Image: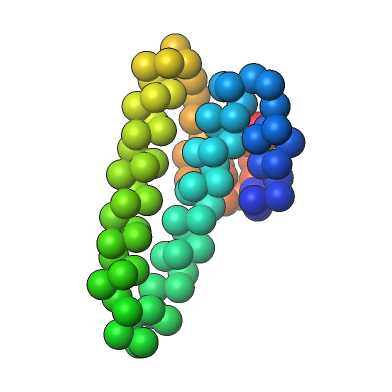
Length: 89
């Protein structure tokens, strides 16, 4: 799954679909940031990288908690399903 695959769900009137799309987008962005890890470390910017990654992980946790509380345990895709694009949103 890529960011462009989440656009339709982000524009939905259904807040559950929007929450799912937001979650998928964040996981996609986090995974891309992880792939850039070496670049940030080599440039001496690892402190900013780690701060951003830490905040993104906290945000992922918050969205997971919202899905459990607000969406009656909506089944969020795991990172492998998002990466492989095996779940539609």
